[in-house]
Length: 253
Image (tube, rainbow, N blue to C red):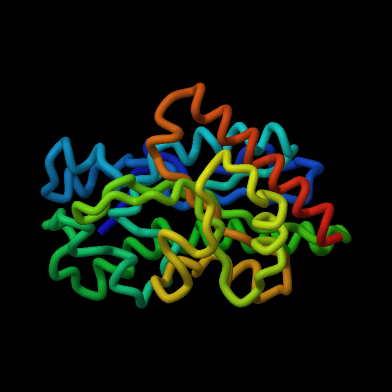
């Protein structure tokens, strides 16, 4: 079964590919677009507009940061519900049958052929494009920095979250440590390490695959999505995060 048609274009988008900055921004959950071949996955309009389908505001913030940092931005053009590119193919969460309170009928009972078709259509091009970009930068004598960008819902399973920005890491803490140190206690945002998720939640796949495996500095940034609902909020948060990253990168040179 073909997941994407030729008219739907490539699953992965690359912007500012010849950027001079070290940072490579990655947005795995940039879009809520579904391939025509999969219909609505049995979900309502409400569900498909919600955080289960994408990370609202994350792409807009990433684009602003890419401009400010002269960074390359790579993102997935289709919804995380079809394939979550921050998960390996063997993970049940790569094609979730349930996301928070929503059942996903179109993902229930997928056989191996269906899973393989989605993996080949969406994950493999995403993984390979990022891998090739990183390897090209290394071959050119640069040490790229992997920064993955996400947003999260203010209320999860009915419980409010007071954290506003999460700085997440796996085994390599260098960049996260430096960002947290740069944030200090200025009080602008409630910022915490490995919240609202952490490595035990399986959210550091991209960091492991493309950062840790090559010894490259890497970090995952989570922003509560009520802070980046509009252009004004996106600009404020992007500017703040750009400042943190700049200070952190200077500190770990």
